[in-house]
Length: 239
Image (cartoon, rainbow, N blue to C red; front, side, top):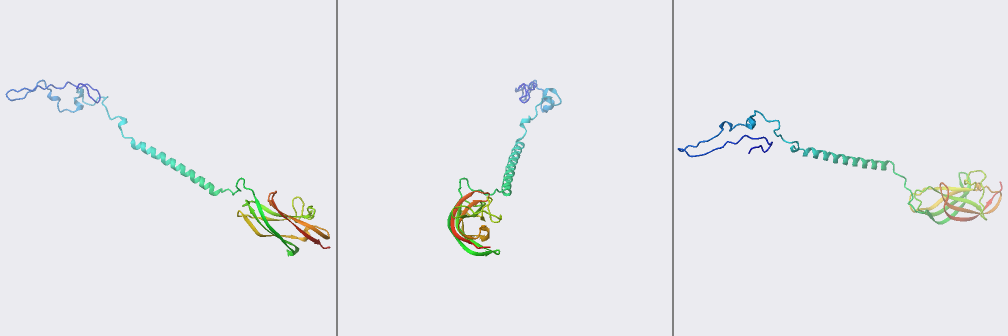
């Protein structure tokens, strides 16, 4: 070989060995015995050290798989940590800021009215009046702020007008209200009681044919459903 297979450096001519038999002895011709057994360092090109272009282990041959795997593993761990932190933040937000339940879209509030009855001459808080009882069931009104409202009317449907702003509506009509707290759907009231003092009807002395208009209304205003009307006779004594 005339060149090094690793670096391409020219090599000295290889010695030529000629063997022949002469009186049973082996001789060599043109043999440079001094060159054998020497290291590459001293033999190549007759130099005493490695040449400047003597090949070393290339960078690409050095192991780097562990470093690459470490970077990949670190990236996956960081991604998992980010996902976990994001999920924890969402769960914490939902726990702290749980929204108030609202009626389902398209769900219509309604009620089934059963009956109304009245106890007269009942005394409450040192006032004489009527204890009004109602029985009804509501649907689609869980967590809805509402009232049972009773308005008082004459026989021809004219509502009585309030005079002292005690039992009255925003329109200035004689009325009494009962706030409803509905935790179930449907919700049933077997005996919802409302007391109405006689003197809050604001009537002069005499006998009257009156009506109670019983309505289910929103707390913010607006009728949900009219439940019933109840006719009764009332006598206002002289004062």
